[in-house]
Length: 438
Image (cartoon, rainbow, N blue to C red; front, top):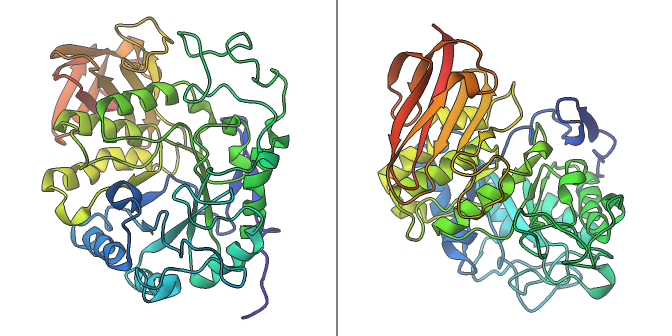
């Protein structure tokens, strides 16, 4: 093996002026700047994963046109290694399920012009009980680089007692909160003091150890932190990886979609180029989500600038859902290379503004882009309602009339005076692109 040329010295920490945060900038100046697009094995297969399923996913991404739409990462989640432990200090791929090894599979994936991702954990075992990387960061990072891995999903299970954090952060999925989602020491005495520096926490140290190990490799590997919104990762994640999970796991149910949407609506200030809140893998095509719920799920994950990692069996995904995943307006907003910030709520609707409600999130959202302003109107209720976006209420819009495009159909709706209204079915969303004044 050739001597490693460390790119740690080339790994810049840039100040993102619009957000007032620091962000990792990868050496090539491009990779990781925008939210990751691709596919991950977990939601589709959990631990029942093998080389054939990974290759089938890659082939389906290519044949369906999703690769051409920008979905470039093919990511192996947990359970790819031998569960019995390390061999000579190294994690060993399961050669029954991955007969060509991870390096052989990576070569095939790269040959199809995709990038490939893998999974490990900042603990003693992965969430599925397989060998993990805490204490082996240098070894594992070097192996991943040798195999040609381009992306690492780094999870947060099985943390030994000597690596747990001194305090808890205000994470609604894991601590007691008030009705408005805030925390106090009366509800949870283990909360961190208000001035606590989370960059000194054991969680930050654990994840930074892998960041530094990856930075010593010749082959560039993106670090995605599956940290579930714990340890106030929003205050330091930009200095460690290109994305960080902002909540507990998603499920293919409507109440899971609204829970994450509500929670993330209060966490959006940490998002910008090179750093993104990860709202978790997509459930498009899974469970009992209705067509309307699936549209809302995808629209808001795209609008919040979350990574978009498809999590279903692509070989049986409906044409309708393939078309949804290729929606040109939502993908263009998610991948905008001029405006790095997400869409944000500008009016809560039925609830007073800034209401924390896991079943009824903010209804009216807007975000700027190269093409115009993306406006989303959510109906969390059980009945069809009429939603109206009034131009004078929408941040960034000061005129009386604008040219409008329906983001679902691509229909040019013409010049709209004063605002736009639409009948929105239960759990569906109206999404429009507000373009030039007219």
